[in-house]
Length: 486
Image (cartoon, rainbow, N blue to C red):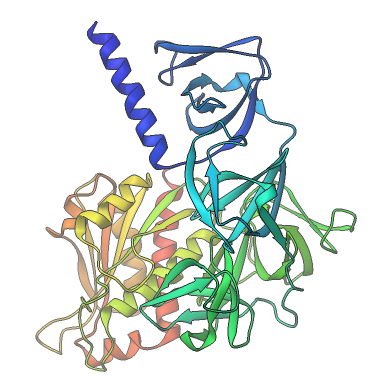
């Protein structure tokens, strides 16, 4: 009896967790009779038995088991080898605008699936695929389905010409509305925070921009400023063809492995224009992920190996009303930390890692919120980026602090020795009772690259070249530590 109660509680917990984070990939049963169980294992209770060709959506995985939802909304687990992709599903990548006053986004391609969120009229939405009369869409980074009857396709303009990478811009205000069209009468697609980097696809009174998650919209140009840097497109599938034009009828120029990084040069329908030292071509957008950086990227180098599949949590210290240290030259620590975090993220993404940022704008987070973001993402390590201050302006140098979790010291050592190698005075690799170090359950470090209270260190931290070198030191140390974990 107790075992049955425990299994039922597990099933209820799984159901609740899925409703909070929705995702959906169409699939069908590929065996005559398949048991739907309350958990990922043969020992769990059988909820139902499904026949061959039963449609469903795949929601998550645990080892060889897949969590699925049936068209009637029933949730459970099946042995993964007995589920295959729905052959009627066609991948794609384009934008649509909602025509209905309110449009339901459902868990699967049918009205019997539960509603997970709603869209409003004129809202711009990214389509990632189609099955029958249903579009698979991405909404706020999550996947669902809408009926094609209630949306209108959006035709993308020609891609940006004349440069290796599309221009980048930085948000200048605390909160900036990104809208579905050129005007305040269009609905807000999302809100951007101070300091966020965006790719500029079209300039004017209203700039057409793209975020790193691929969502496209419009912002008033007066609230962003152009910055130097690269918009990166990274191959997210294995052996992807780059073609001479935006269609499969064009000739293949090159074939790229997963993890290869190219410059993102523009859009043409569902195709992305990419550039490298070998030339310019086109790749389907749903085969790419994007990252923006103001750090220099050398496209002549092969992609770094050994860190694909790892998740790195990058924490930009301070933020919002908490500026951190104020430099003798007026620099605010929170801004330097955020700049370094964005640059580090882009280098890690370009090398194949997944990165979760604790903050993506200028706002405050508690210690528990920062740690929670890392833990919830399943991060393999946590790096908190800071810069230092001291009552005496004579104190200078770099410090690295390591956490209590096994592996933290070695991680700190790899990063610290590279920061010292930049010519900074070695102020030590130390442990400390910082919340982000002692309450994390994963290897964690906190870096203090320089002292803003010291005139020489502050002058270095004001230089883009030095910041790039410091970020590269972080990246190389993290990369070396992760490679040893394979």
